[in-house]
Length: 457
Image (cartoon, helix red, strand yellow):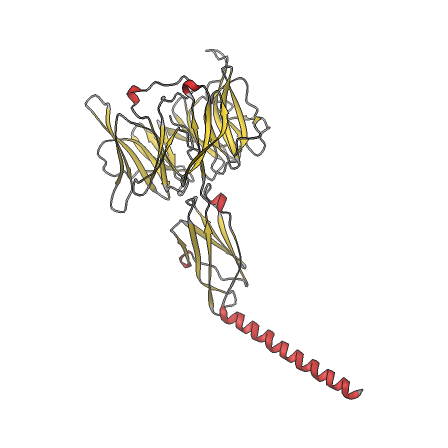
């Protein structure tokens, strides 16, 4: 019995010794390999519609601070990096292009206690985005919102109504402005056009300029009372609403206790603020949450665009185009190249890249040709040339800046306009081109493409 106990104890000692060696060897092996990837978190669906989404790497040990130079994104995309313990977040500063596989690699990641380095890498496949556009029925009397995709010519009608003025896509639905009995009605549906809910408005009246914020959780529009006179009623006041609580009462924007009449306005991407030009021509930056006082930015004629990557507003003043850094409210001179013709509008592709719509005009100022240019490494690059017969009514870049949607009125001289609050020619198309080289991607019948911030004007 004693010998059995000795044998058992000896056996246990051998087993424990082997385990110690294995565990110790595993620890040495782990340290010898450097940091290893344990998990990755990302949201490809959100990454194609909003800036600020992240790919979060979790390593097997705390890491030294990762320098942006250690990170590679292929295809190229602008990003920032933050390190916290075992996690590294790669934050994209503007939306990614849909239908693309991105590889994100962190090279030479080193543990907090030193030792060898390791490589952390993952791939993110963004989905192909659904596109929605508005097709008015004309004589058929039935307007429709149609769903399609860039890589598929199949179309599906998701919503019908006798009178659709405009619509915007939210993060998970469609916000639709219709007219019933001469007054506006605001409807919220899911992305299939189902489960329609009528939303509260400030009263009976009409709305225009419907917009949704960059992340799709807030909306706004200009509202005019149905019974307005020289002495009473509200004319084109700006109204905002929280889509997370669609039954909440909408809020009328006021400055110094007064709701000004608004001529133009835009949501500022990645913020809770809006830019607006009132009827006096005053440009203001306004926080819709009321967290800050409105900022007077002087007079302006037009809000051309807001750059997602730099928070610069592209503004046209009486003196000409300019840029305003919305983080500091300081004006930055616009860097315009030499362009052959009259600059009609400037657009932001993100991270400082620009597109310019230019027209050539005759002696009395009537456009005869239209051109689109984009910024290039050695000067402007011509993307497109059109005659005045088929004019561009609006241009809007895709969220990633990879594509441009052009609203075009073919044979405008031979077309009649409908009688909507937002009148549109009877023949209207949306031409989607590659923003790099002007290559045609898709031609669609209709307008008001869902990635556009606002309707043609």
